Amino acid sequence: MNQLAALQGSITPIVTPFRNGAVDYETYARLVDWQIANGGHGVLVNGTTAEPSSLTVSERNRLVDVAIEAAAGRVPVLAATGSQSLADTLELTAHADKAAVAGLLVVTPYYIRPPQRGLVEYYAEVAARTDRPVLIYHIPGRAAVSMDLSTVKAIKERAPNLVGMKHAVNDMGFVTHMLDAFGPDWRVFVGLEELSFPMLAVGACGLMNAVGNLAPRKVAQLCEAVERGDLEAGRKLHFDLFELNLSVFFDTNPIPIKYMMKRMGLLPTNEHRLPMVCATPELEKRLDGVLERAGLI
Image (cartoon, rainbow, N blue to C red; front, side, top):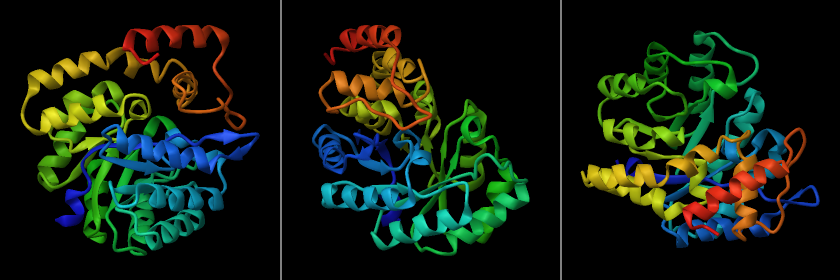
């Protein structure tokens, strides 16, 4: 239960800063510190917003170490350790386990589109390598594979340390089905910004949203409002964040996020690795308007 208590609230998937093609670990450490100073409840290393598929295993492992050092025990640090390869996933998981992260987020293996029985075996194998809490990262739009409730149940039977899911798909009903099947201690993190408030109201325990890179305090306040039962305050924050939430998906995430962070002075450069590219001039102008209306520039 002590482990589960750490897995709640706004846990921001931090972007990966690049400088001249290399990972900028110094800026990354500053971003972790900025998150904590501005009300974030935790940080997620190597989430989708971090462009992990463009990183090497060693780069991903070093980002975990940098985050642990920068957080210095002030908030939980979770690591996304999933890859398309079981071998890479196990290597990433072993490193994060040794680094003493608060939990592991493992994405459904992407591109290969495994059958449901393959997912059961995969997660059972990964979870058996660690005693730390494991969460499934369910993001069919990116991974091209969806997971049904019977599969989650089968994994849970094989892996007692499976404690929840980051749910990044427009399916509110699945959240209710999971909480009904596994009880209120099942950790559901919202992965789609505009569904944050309604999923929290149903019983999700927190958010892992890219927009936390821009407005960590307001996103954290949304979690806190729903947790204390103040739905009126939560609803207001939902609408306060609405345009900012939408802007995340004006182009492929994190293209808009990185441009806006550069405009806010959080990133010294707006840089991606191919095939990701920077925002177009037209998108930059659109995002400037969003930032101005949000009071962020």
